[in-house]
Amino acid sequence: MGVGAFASTPFEHGAISVEGGMVAPLFELSEVFDRVPMAQGEMSFSYANGMRSQISLAYAKLTGWKKSQVEHLVGSMGLDYAVPYLHGFEIGAGIGLFFERATSPLVQSSSAVYYQLSSNESDFGWICRGRMPLFHFGEKTQLHLGVNYQQIWTSPIPSRFFWIGIGVGVALW
Image (tube, rainbow, N blue to C red; front, side, top):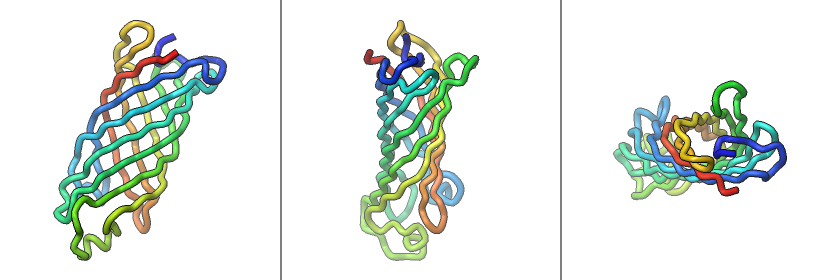
């Protein structure tokens, strides 16, 4: 079975993948931060027929804010489902822990107070994702297109990001 294939028993197959692409801040954050490169690593295991569990770690350095650059680190876990008759297309959702770190001292201005980021912040959120296989290299390796929507449960306004990237995955067993 290839990387996009699923098993009928838990942990029958395991895979790792890496992705590189762009992350775009949405809504209010798009006025503050630029679109920037983002990298992600993932490990997944078969869970049930058509389902797999996944854990991932992603990183980007957000730029464009005049006050500071912000390190954006996302750890997430969730479930993906292979949609029948769509040639390996997967859709999934999960929960994420988002860590933000300002990399230079901030001046306490209305902008800094509004975004409430004066040093390090972490918060939970959710992620909705999709993945489409583009090309298979033998039975164990595939090239794929990945997209996801991230929403951080910040207060008073949730922070939202959209990510799109190209990745390669390898089946471990």
